[in-house]
Amino acid sequence: MIQIHCPYCGETLPELEFAYAGEAHIERPLSPSEQSDEQWAEFLFLRENVKGPHFERWRHLHGCGRFFNAVRNTITDRFYITYKAGEPRPDLATLLEEDK
Amino acid sequence: MTRFNALNLVKNALSGHKNWTEQWPESQPKAEYDVVIVGAGGHGLGAAYYLAKEHGITNVAVIDKGWLGGGNTGRNTTIIRSNYLYDESARMFDHAVDLWQGLSQELNYNVMYSNRGVLMLAHTVHDVQSFKRHVHANRLNGVDNRWLTSEECKEFCPPVNIAKDARYPVLGGALQERAGTARHDAVAWGYARGAAERGVDIIQNCAVTAIRRHPDGSVAGVETEKGFIKAKKVAVSASGHNSMVMSTADVRLPLESMPLQALVSEPVKPIFPCVVMSNAVHAYCSQSDKGELVIGSGTDQYVSYSQRGGLPLIEHTVAAISEVFPIFNRMRMLRKWGGITDNTPDRSPIVGKTPVQNLYVNAGWGTGGFKATPGAAHTLAWTVAKDEPHPINAPFTLDRFRTGRLIDEAAAAAVAH
Ligand SMILES: Cc1cc2nc3c(=O)[nH]c(=O)nc-3n(C[C@H](O)[C@H](O)[C@H](O)COP(=O)(O)OP(=O)(O)OC[C@H]3O[C@@H](n4cnc5c(N)ncnc54)[C@H](O)[C@@H]3O)c2cc1C
Ligand SMILES: [Zn+2]
Image 1 (cartoon, helix red, strand yellow):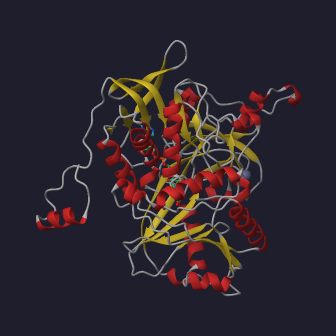
Image 2 (cartoon, chains in turn blue, brown):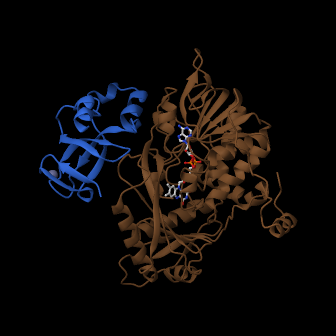
Image 3 (cartoon, chains in turn green, orange):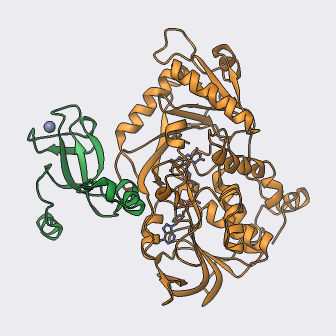
């Protein structure tokens, strides 16, 4: 079973406590009425679907209930890092270097 | 190629089955093809077969990064049914079920289609209401489906537990009698053999790394591990990896790839006469001709290409199976595996033309595309040959995610298989 570190609780817990919440760092448009249909399609439906390191959101559903972000490798399912919502997107090259 | 018939079977039995000829040759890529199909699953091989047979286009290659039928075609739980809610889906899946009926004869290859019936169990008042709505909608579309009481469910499939105090009480079920199962590998092999017989090259162990385009944007061919292959038209049918392959042609697809798992038990004597699905508790079960219970699980919640899947899902599935069929709770499971399914936001496929001239796509079949194999392949071949949508695949455009005309089977049916 995958073990996930909640950056709020500071604990590493089984995946069953968590809910996946899709790709991370997708921002809702600030002025929705000015968006074209293409832009809406992109915001609502288009995802990177990366094979490799993937930025994604998780929620500690059966714990503190809070949303946080993570970088996980979608080939091995291993997490490189989890970090609090609102924190900047970590630099991937540095993460992969540290992981070696 | 040897045709299979009783006389040939007897002759080969007498010579110890040592003299069967090969079913398709091991092809190497030619410099150029009229059509290249990426992905030798049932859909891709079937499309090649129909291109050759019905449209006279035989200068075709089907290219796979692994072995043919080694993707989801060879990994699925083979449930075939067409009782989908929406008109568009009903037409697509019922077209496939029509073709399934005669497929063994058509291919001269036994795909073991068995219309043993698919029974979907209702466990809550909500299930009962929505399944009855399905039954009515299906009938209006000419798709067979009928309502059974819980006693009738038990009669149709004796291992089902209909006790009133069961954890998941059975309040009734919807039965499609024309539905059933088929032998997954045989579908890939039968189409491969039929396509190869008509001149199609099947190229295995050769990943397509990119789609190359002309300066005017139209398709020029595919880059592969064995070099560049020129093609007038390219159709991508690479379940699980469609978004990656298509992004090399700058076409973004609204897909997320997730592992879906299945497992089989030790073989036992015939006990399970049909297919039973229980969407509410996530248990799907049938018995193969070898005697194994074939059990389907759910997808992981996250994007993954691990082709393995998480253990919690298996645990959940086995728990549900033991509740709905207590008779099986001491059965031993032999093995489990996963396949990568590509899922669209509305859980309906994307089939047809793309913004790139001469590039076609057959994607997003998610967790339920095996049943569609002959129908999807047949209509995809039409679209590639004529460069226009077939009336049946026409609604399944990529553009629907811009216009909002979704075919929302996700909400309507909680479709799993
Ligand atoms: C566990 C499980 C259970 C399922 N149960 C059912 C069920 O009961 N009923 C049902 O209807 N459906 C079911 N499905 C879904 C069904 O299996 C698929 O929708 C269907 O088989 C897809 O067929 P295909 O031919 O498109 O894909 P595949 O058979 O997956 O073929 C795609 C091929 O593309 C190849 N490929 C990928 N990338 C490349 C590349 N870059 N270059 C070259 N080749 C490439 C792959 O190697 C693969 O062979 C299930 C799926 C799984 C995983
Ligand atoms: Zn927490």
